[in-house]
Image (cartoon, rainbow, N blue to C red; front, side, top):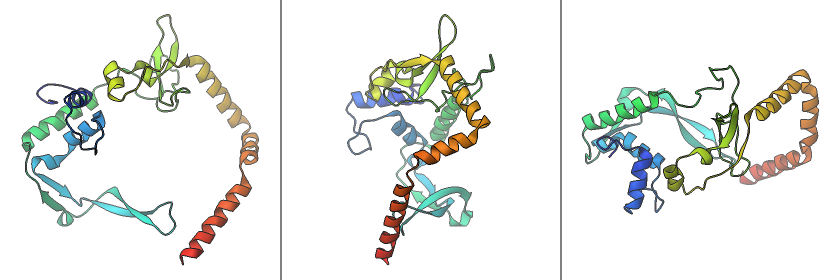
Length: 226
C-alpha cells in the first residue's frame, strides 16, 4: 500500500484499523509509528543482521541493577549474526520502500526547520519548546491572516485523519506568539544580567531536607541488599 498505493503511514494505519486487522501491539490499534517500524524492518526480506553494534551497561533506578544499551559503535563484521526468516518481500522492493521514505524525509517542511525564521530573523519557540496548557501537546506557530503569528496546539492544526487515528479532539488553545516570545526574552535577559538572584530562588525552592532523606533511604536500601 505504501509503495504501490502511495498511501502515508497514517493512511495505512487508518485502513488497517477500519478493516479490523490485528496489530502486533497485543490488542492495541495500528498507528503511524507501528506501520513505519514494519516498513523499516529488514527481517521481512528473509534476513536480518544482528549484533552489529556494541553495547554499554548503564545503571537503572534500582540499586545494583544495570541494563544493556546499544550504541552507534560498530562491531567487527566477524561478530555479526545473520538470522534467517521466511521472506515476505524481495530485497529490491524493500530498497524501493526505504528510498521512498528517505525522499519524503528529505523534502523541506512547510513549517520552519529551526529556531530562526529566515524571513524576518525572529526567533521561534515552537520546535518542541512550548507545550499546550490545556492538553500538554506541543505548540506550533501559525501565521495569522491579518499579520503576526499565533502559537496553536498541535491538535488544533492536525488533520482530521490524524486526530481520528490517535483519538484526539480538536484542542482550541492558542496564544499570541509575540507576547510569549517577548516574555521569554525578558526572562532570559534578566537571568543573564543577574544569575545569582535566580540561583538564590532556586536554592530557596529546593527542599534540601527531602533530598537528604531520599539519600538516606537509598543508603539504607543498599546496605540491606549486601
